[in-house]
Image (tube, rainbow, N blue to C red):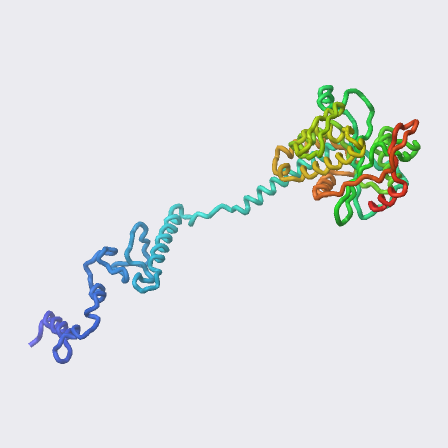
Length: 414
C-alpha cells in the first residue's frame, strides 16, 4: 500500500530521463554530444591534471588560492582556442603575479622598490657644490691683494663696459736659484718692472677685446713726466701704473690682475700645459727658448720664454701679439672640461693661482671666474696704433703712439 523511499527515488530518476512519451530526454539534447558537458560532469579527476580541458576551470579550482609553484593548465580569462591570441600572455601574467606575491611574502613589507636615483644625484651635486664653494673661498682668501685704484682722484667716468688691467711683472719673488735657472730669468733683485700690460675690454653685449700696450710705449707718467710705460710700475707700483693707463687712454679701469714670472709658469704647469701653434721657429738663449714651427704643447718654462722673447723680426710688437695669443689660450684651457672635470687640476690650479695672482682689494675669485669665461668665448686681439720709435736720452729707445689714431682707438673702448 505504501511505497518504500528507495522505490520513490528510483521512480523520480526514471521520470527525469523520460519525456511524456517515455523517451530519454538526453538523447534529444544537443549538448549531450558535447565532450565539454561530459567533462563538466566528471568528478573523479584531480585538479590541474593532463585530463582537464584548459578552456574550463577544473574541479577544485579556487580563484582566491595562491598557486605559487604550480603550473596550471587552466588560466582565467582568454582561451587558447578563441582566436584572440591572449592565452599565452595571461599565463605569463599569472606567473609574474606569483613572483610578486612571493617577494611580498618573503619579508612582509611588500615588493622591493628601486633606490631613489634622483635623490642620490641631487645629494652628489650638493656635495660637489659645497666642495667647490669651499675651495673657491680658500682661493679668494689666499689671493694677493693691492689697492690699485687708491692713488687717483681724477679718474675717467664709468661706462656700461667692464675693463681689466692685466699685468705681467718680472718679479722673481719666491724663486730659488734653481727655479731662476730653469726659467732663464736670472737671479738677484732687479726691481719690479712690467713685461706685459694689457687691457681686457668687455662690453655689456658683444665680443670682448684684448688690447696690448707695449712696455716701451712713451707716455706721460703722473708726477714723473715722459717715460716708458713700464717705468710707472717701478716708480709707484700698481697704483701708479693704473693711474698712468687711465691718464693716457681715458679708459676707466674696473679690475686689476697681476702675475709674476714664477706664478705664470706654475699656473701653466697646473693646467697640464698649453697647446700653441707658432708659425716660425724661435731660438732665444736669453729667454731659454728653442722651439720649432707647428702645433705643440708648452710647459710652464717654455710658455714663459715664448711670451718674453723678442728674438723675432718686429721685436716688442711680435712679443705683445704672442702674449695676447697665449693669454687667450690659457683662459680657454682653464674653462675646458679637461680642467674642470679633473679634481686634481682643480686643486693644483687653485693652489698655484692663489700663490701667483695679485688682484685689487675689491676683486674676488668670482670676478676672476667671469674674466676667464668671457675670454674663453673669444676676444679680438689688438695693439694700440703706433707711429715708430724714437731714441731719447733718459729713457733710451721708445715706442711712439700714433697721435691721430690712438685717441680714436681708445674712444672705441669707452
